[in-house]
Length: 422
Image 1 (cartoon, one colour):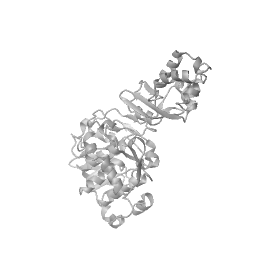
Image 2: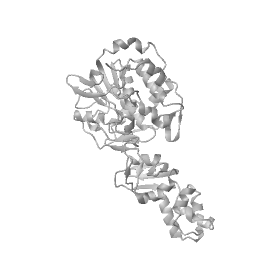
Image 3: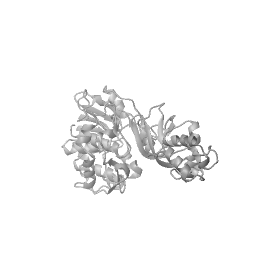
Image 4: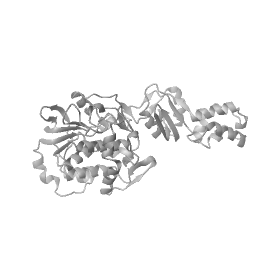
């Protein structure tokens, strides 16, 4: 029988306030239930939102989670404060082989709808850069909020529940280590492959393929990039150094912080561009966005002719980086350097071209790019077109957001859309 959420978990793990009856009062009755209107596999952001949405429509919902607590990725997100959405969220902030697919769900449940839910639960929040919204306190407040909403509509949550098999005849049968459960609708909300130490698996993709739903290319996204030894000769000594840059590759262009690491490049700008990068691609890094480096250096040759080049570069770059970039230059004042050499330096500053050797993989990736092919799903309901009653939501779908709260918004929007349809 399912290990349904106990009052001790509510009070000690999430600190959830009791609303109405103690869940233990109905536990004996509920533990005998094996028939549901909908079973949702995965109690993460998308799964909990879907459960809440379906429960509000009077559906009997079972939410299954293989971990010992719900919302584990929510809890660690945003440095423990959860970047729960972005006020600028729009379809152009998402990657997919069908760039139009996300429009319906994002329009029907917007960032403003989720912000209203946050306000309803009196969770204090603040805006950081580029429209990113974070909790003032703990990310656990978001998990608590979602659970309270689920509890209010009698959603059943089964923790430490591993799915061992799924089949379908006139209804879905979900075999687990806590018994077999049946439903007319099944929602795959177990995410992708990113952060396997948190228990991430390809379960949703495997089940989708079991029902003949196609997958797109699947790979790590929002992930640090790695480089060859030749490039690391510059990067490794500067490990920990960060500065604003504009990074471009293919159709991606991002102006955010770049971070040097002992393995290569990271930071928001690199994580963003990693979703666009493919093996063999070159990326362009403008280390002085908004500044024409050639013009700046030639002007400084006139204004500060006796200054060293590294001193001039230290005006616009971190001093450690300026020293590294000028290490092989003639040790003479900038006024004694040729205009051609200064133009060459300026070109490199505005267009440093590097070719990553790879990325740090799913262990460091914030999300999984690709997933269940959107051509196989309804953009309005998230239901499989050829398998009635089967829904796929969240990270398991070929919709991947930018860094900055966009992937959570896709979880809320796709989860809500499915919940309105199951």
